[in-house]
Image 1 (cartoon, rainbow, N blue to C red):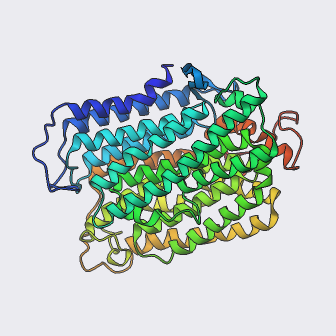
Image 2 (image 1 turned 180 degrees about the vertical axis):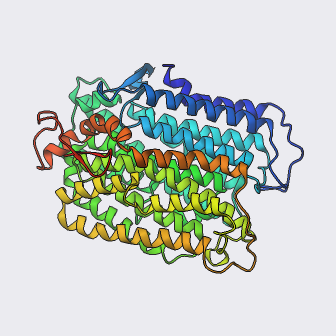
Image 3 (image 1 turned 180 degrees about the horizontal axis):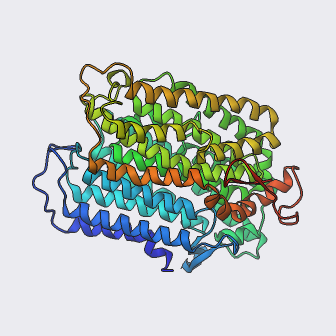
Length: 538
C-alpha cells in the first residue's frame, strides 16, 4: 500500500494546483456567493475532483487491504518531526479509523462532484480559491483521523478550522455568513485552546513518569498512565473541545447560524464528517489515555448525551427550516453516539463507531436533496413551501425515502444495528438512561417521516415545480445511497473490522467501570444474530 501521507496530502496538493492554474470557466459572478446559470466546469474544479476521487480510491484500497484478524496499526508512517518536543509525524490505519477515512473521502468526492455537476447549481465565484480551501479541509480531516501522535492530532484538528472560516465567510449565504463565521471561530477556537493545553499537560506529566523524555506518541503515552487527579481535569478540557465540535447540548450555540450560512456542499461534509472528529477523539484519545477519568465522569457524559438527544429531537420536529431540522436531528444522533462511547463497554462503543459512519452516509444525501427541493420550491428551504412532487418525481422520492428510513433506524438498516448496539451497551451500564434514550428512537421516526412526507407529499406548494431528478444529480446521490444499502444488507463488513480496535480502546475503562473482566482475558466473543448477516458482540 502507498504511504498514508499520499492519502492525506493528495487533496490539498490538487487544491493548490487548481488554484495556481489559470481558470477556464467562462466568467465570474456576483461577489460573495454562487452565480451564473447551470454547471460550468473550471480547471480548479476538474483538478479538485481528480484529487478527491484519487483519495477515495486510496481509501477504498486501505479498507480492502485491512485484515481484521491482524489488529493493531497498519501502514504506519513514523518520522520524528520536532525532536526537542518529542513530536512525531506518525500516521496509521486500524479498525477505529479505516471506515471513517473511507467516509471522509466518499463525502468530499460527492460534494466536489455536486459543486461541478448539480444541474441547478451556481458555480462558485473565485473557483480556484474555493476548491483550495475545500480540498485543504479534506486533508485536515483525513490527517486528524490517521494521526497517531497527540500533538499532530491537535495540529490537524486546528487546521480544520482555517478552510471552513474562509468557506463560510467567503462563500456563505447572506445575511448570516458573518455572524456564523464569528460564532464558529469563537466556539471552536476556545475548544482548540483547551485541547492544546490538555495535550501539553499530558506530554509534560507523562514525561515525569518516563524518565524526563517528553513524548506525544499515543502508544507511548498509553504506557505512561497519569494519576487520577491529573486525568480528571485533562479529561474535562478534551471533552469541552470535542463536544463543541460535535456539537452537543449545551455547547451548540454556533450550530443554527452555521447551518443556515454554509453552502450546501460545504455543509454536506461539515455535518457528515467534521462532527465525527470529536466523537472519534473520545475513542482514540480520551478512553485509552484517561480511563479513570472516563469512569469518573461517565454519568455526566451520559446525561449530556441524553440531553442532546431529547433537545435535538424536540427541535427537529418543531422547526420548518429544513437545514435546522437536519442540524438538530444530527445533534440527537451524535447524542446517541456519545451514549455508546460512554457506555464504556465494547457493544456500545462498536455501535457508536458504526453509527458515526451511518450518520455521515445519511446526512449528506439528505442535505443534497434539500437543495434540490429548494430549487423546485422557488429557492425556499422552508418545509411549508415544499410538497406534492412525489408522483411526478418518483426516482427522487424513492431515493429520499431510502435515506429517510435509514435515518429513523428502520429495522433492516445499518442504522438500526448501530442504535441497537448503543442501547444494548447503555442498558448494561446505566439502565435508567437507556430507558429514557429509547424515547429518542421514537422521536427520530417523527422528525424523519415528517420531513419526508411534508417535502414530498401533501398539496403542491404555490411555487413548486414538479420535475424528476436529473442524471447529473443522480450521479451525486446514487453512490451514497448504494453504500447505505450495502451496509444495510451486510453491516458485519464494518463491525468485524472494527471489533479488535474498539475492544482495545475501551479495555482499561471497561475494567475500571466494574462491568466485567479484561476483554482480552475473556473467552472469544460469542456471536448473536439480530437478522440475516448481523453479528453482535455478546
